[in-house]
Amino acid sequence: MKPNFYKIFKDRLFEAEEEESEKKDKKEDKDKKVKIETESTLDKVLKKSKKLPAVLSKLMTTQDSYNKKAEKELREVVSDIRCVSYRPTTFRVIIPNSNYFDIIYDPTPLQIDYEEDYNPIELFTISVLGKRYSMGNRSELEQCIDYVNTLLKSNPITKKEEPQEPEAVGGEPIPEEPKAEEPPAEEKEPKK
Image (cartoon, rainbow, N blue to C red):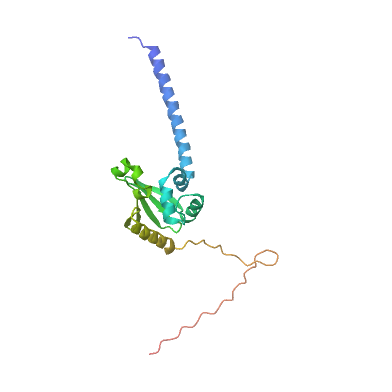
């Protein structure tokens, strides 16, 4: 049986094209990973989501709706937002003092079918310190706001101050004087 050179040549060309496409895919994946790592999750949520910023502004700002002023206030009190789970969709809001609370988006099928009958804030549940609060219930919303304020107050947000060395008139640091060594204190004998 004679080898079919046309088929062999065609197969090798196909293999070469596959290798090139795999290399391009790997390079594109690397570029995507770099972009994802450098972009903040907080920025993504505030830009792309419609409902979550409204809930956050209701909870953590003085504004009733999400606007530029509310966004500025949110950036001061929220350090990051992470997606914890996809079912139910749960976001973890991290406060700069390393405390956090969870926002859970879990609408019922009825709320999805008749979305115009429900306020978007009613679709969220807040989990703070192990307790769940429905955003649709006014009294639970007030309790939730109190607990979030407690989280904000529990570890105050502080900036570490750098130690400053005293400076001389010329702007150079003052050299420290060597301390005189003290003679060791004599131990007293206990009374018998």
